[in-house]
Length: 542
Image (cartoon, rainbow, N blue to C red):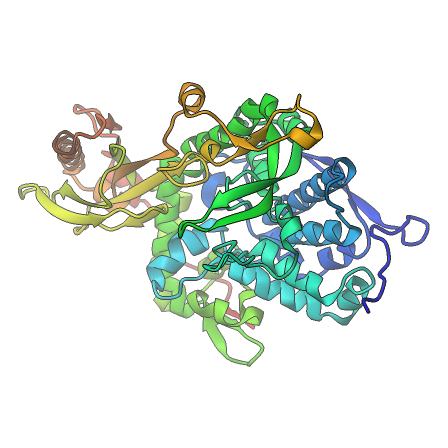
């Protein structure tokens, strides 16, 4: 027989709890035992990891942390569960459901490495392609450490059963498929009738979830960028969502029934604003060409410094930055301070990374020559024309275009390019609105049926494709100081133009003037660097 648990959240008289003030959401209550989770080293570490990585180098106010974002996601997750519980009579949402979803929202980003998505999106695939590291994996492992604290687990067990811990893990890192090939429900934390709870924190079906809601509001605020999605959008989506049973045909032909969060057709524009805003922020902030230049330089510095940046694990072994994820005690010691570890080191092996970081402070960056957007439906493997040396004719170098944002070095000392992918949350070939389910809010509750938006209306309201893929070509900072920089950049842009014509891509956008190259800066200014590299210490994190 299952033991009855206490009601959550506890009464204020029984368990007084504190509140925090948030720039985006105002007052956020932290009832027991949420406060115990916040007050752990695993969660406090997020204070030292910037939400947007190197973006603050371009947008100075974008220096907010994963810590505040996680609090915001927790707050929205809890509000959405409570809204469903208050309005839905078809299914009972329990206090345990609310607590589990709240914890998942709070802890979903525990596993981020230095500079957030830069670590698992750019650094790890480059330095250790075989690792397949994902921050969701790290979040689960660090959450397990939190659950191991005796006082935290004891407090949680006042409100939760053992299967609830499984539910929390599944909310953070769900299985790739909701159903098995036999059509069986693939989750263990909650039964099929509560499947809609998995849509709240991380929605893999239509990409409309509270994680996205918070970072859209928070990032746009700090960057001072106007987007369609706003606090009013959040309120409308919360007011007009409801779980409904849907019938879906799986890829292997089997029909299954389960519940999903659906939205009233009257808030169609608000739902669409989620994807539009995500695309806008990628275009203006996350994938800004100068942000990408900073990230390229940081990745070069960290790849060289990797074997010198050592972090002590609980097995007494020392782990390099790229291997710290193999021991969570070592990984706990990694955050954005790895840059200061390099700068303050006196090791000869870190001389080149120190030089690169010094270039960043003097804004000696790769200079964007031009960019071109690839045509829709292009093959994943392209041939990109480039010159390995200014004096040689243009050569064709095979380039593998990744679905994820990544950068690749084109042979030669004077150039590099980045493949930039921007989408609305579900890749470049799928629009999230095609997967969102709506209902007629004027129908009686018993007659409400979920439906997808009409394709003709979708085409009228929003682009049918989910995003775009482009190539940005840079002149490296080392090449920019050479006397032929202007000519190199001009020839590179000619290569981009030829590539665009041959592939029927969009006309490239020039970032240079033929008369004066943006990268043609004087050698004296860029080479005027003090040789004195006085340092303060080593790079071991013990």
